[in-house]
Structures are given as C-alpha cells and as structure tokens.
Image: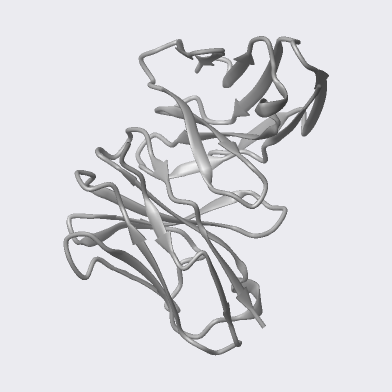
Length: 113
Length: 112
C-alpha cells in the first residue's frame, strides 16, 4: 500500500542552525502539507502546497520557514534559523484532491538545543 | 474560526466493551471530517473520512457519524481490544480551505 515517508526520523540541531526536513508523498497525489505537533499539544497546520506553490499557510509559517518540491518526488520543509520553540514532531501529508483523505507520514522529531 | 474539541480527554474500558468517542466543532460549514489514530511517539493513521454529503462511514469495527447541524461527530468502536489502545483524533476541513483543524484527542486504554 502506498505511504508517505519522511526523513530523518529524528533530528537534533543547535539554535540558529538551518534544518531541512524531507518527505516523499504518495506518488499520484497533488496536494502536500506540513503539520507540527509540540509535545502534549494539538496537531497544527503549517502550510499546504499545490501546483508548485503555497496554497495556504498558517500564522506559524513565518519567513523562517519555506517549502519546496525540488523534483517530482520530494517535498521539503526548511527552517532557516531554528529556535527552541521549533522543537516538535513535524508531519508531512498528501492527498489526491484538496478535501479528500489526507495520508500522513511517520513524522520527524526535531529537537533544538 | 473553526475549533474542534473532543470529549472525553481520556477513557479506560475493559476489553470487549463498545465505546463512543465524541468530537464537536464550532462551524457547521465544516466540509469533511477525518478520524485518526495516533500511537505514542508515532504518526497519524487515517481511520475514516466522512464527506459532507454523508452521515456515516464504516470500516470493520469502526463506525463514524457526522451531524453538521449539531456540530458533532462520533466514533463508535465495537468489541474493543487492547490493540485499540491509542489516542484518537478528529480533524475537520473548514469551508473554504483544505487544511485540517485537529481536536485535542481522546486517549483510549482498553484493559485486557
């Protein structure tokens, strides 16, 4: 069964460093998303991406964040200068259509020290 | 602004019991609603998607309903098993958006 994959599973970085989180969405899907979950809190939407551009972003998704689909299979989230409060589990998701079922990857646990 | 809440926050039941998890949302313009399961430290596994035109959806021992007029969805789990122990999340799509808005989750423990 097709699935969303994410790498790495755990990333530790120092405050101020840049990180890139990688995702491979399901191959025939057209909509891609990033969410995050701070420990003990709700899952929060960050950004959605369709047709090679951002279709929606949340207040969390400020200038420190960017997304890219560098080729036909990968979807990346970059955090330019990490802060302690960026420590969270980051989930990638994809769907074949905008309001259809979203499939989530296993997540990347980001720890900023 | 759409807000999603789930009651109860935690639930412990003996194996074999039928149970209901509740999800409520503030904006009846919700489009679709999706239920997920999350195991500790893991990703989100999609269980069911109820489209706005549907009132319920079934998968195995799971049955989810959606009542937009009352702003509620329920997830019914029949004949619970210890392997059902996890956090259950509901998430809805807003009216003009394709982002999911998540509830706080219900932590379910099924005792053998």
